[in-house]
Structures are given as structure tokens and as C-alpha cells.
Image 1 (cartoon, rainbow, N blue to C red):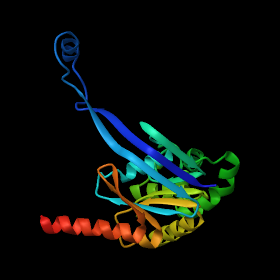
Image 2: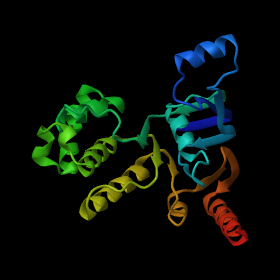
Image 3: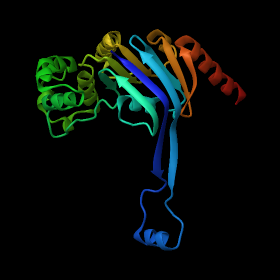
Image 4: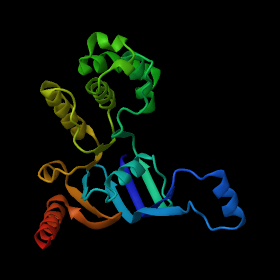
Amino acid sequence: MARIELEQVNLTFHVRQERGVRLKDFILKRLFMPSRNPGMKVHALRDINLRLERGDRLGIIGHNGAGKSTILKLLAGIYQPSSGRRLVEGRISSLFDIALGFEGEANGWENISFRSYLQGETPTSVRAKKQAIAEFSELGEFLNMPVRFYSAGMMVRLAFSIATAIEPEILLVDEVLSVGDLAFQNKARERMREMMAKAHLMVVVSHDLDAMPQMCNRAVWMDHGQVRAMGPCAEVVAAYRASVEGHALAA
């Protein structure tokens, strides 16, 4: 049973305005002076309410910095709410930061195992999928080489091949992936379509407003960490377009 619920979720980050504090400043601050390195509070998400059930395909749109990717990372469990309730039921596959978990000195075969374990696979399930992952990546003999010698394109190929080898209940996608040469991109798009069709529930972030209504039945428009609008995908996208065009004309 795939299900997502967010109730009055807030996410706040506490960051420093400067990278470090000199020992002298630290002592003076403690004894006599106000802080020269004050903390800054960033309220990344504000009062988010969301309920998704099996079969839902949710698109998240909004300007850069609106909180779109932050919601995905919260759903994936990378961030925990500062307040409110987060409930996610179902096996998650996250297609963002797909190169996370690679060990530079290990070869491609070994990294297939390492990255797969981070996705919840077991040694038994990895053995069953390893050859198919290798064939999809088209890296051949390069899989015997430490990945620190890989080009950026080779790394992304391998990462994408591993990340899309599982069968997710909940699929989280951040932007459309551009992977390798044209022939491999066609393979990657087909693999993405297959995953999207199999997933019980999907949440996708994208700036491609034309493609969004084709992929999703619902949409959320984020604006400065808050939900500006939520509803049928075509309606929310149309409202967002009108707002962007209106601001452009006003400028």
C-alpha cells in the first residue's frame, strides 16, 4: 500500500552566516561582545499539507528556490520535519543525487553492489540484477576499472542504470535526467517511462510545463516554501503560467 501524508509540515534550517570563527573573536564574544557569527534561520517549508494515495501522479512546479526539491528530500527521509507529521508508506526509489554512495577506488561492479545496498537491495537481489545493470550501462570492460577514472558521462550512465533497476512503489524524480549520448538518452527515457508506469505512486519535480500534464494527474505550485495552489495538474500549470507571464509583462 503506497501512501504519503504531510500534515502541517514545517522545515527550518539553522545556518551560520560565516564559515568559521577565530579563537580571539570566540573569546571576546563569550566575554564581552555580541556574536560576530550569528546564526540565521531559513524556513524552507511552511505548513505543508499533502495526501497522496496509490495511483496518484503528482507534479511539483514553481520558481527556483521555491522548495520543490526540498519536499522531495523530505519525502525520501533525507530531511525530517522540524514540526508537523510526515507519513510515507511504501518502498521508495529516489532519482536525485543518483551518484550518491559511489566509492572512487572501487570498480564499476563493486559500486553496483554498494549503490544498490543504499537503495534497499540485498546481496541476493543484487546478484540477480547485476548483469542486467551492467548491460544497460553499456560500459563493458570499463566496469573492471576504478570509477575515479570514469568520465562524468560514464558515472551518470552507471548511476542511472543502478538507480532505475529497482521496482519502486513510490517514485521520486527531480527533473528530467540527461544521460550519455543520444542513443543512450532514448534508452533512459524508455526506462523512465517503464518505471513511471510501474510505480504505485509518483512525485516529480520539473520545469517542463508542457510535459507535466502528460505525466501527472495532480500538481502543487510551490512559492517561497509554501503551497500556492494544489489541484488537477492542467489547472495548476495554467495558473502558474499566467502568473509568470503576468510578472514578465509587469517588468
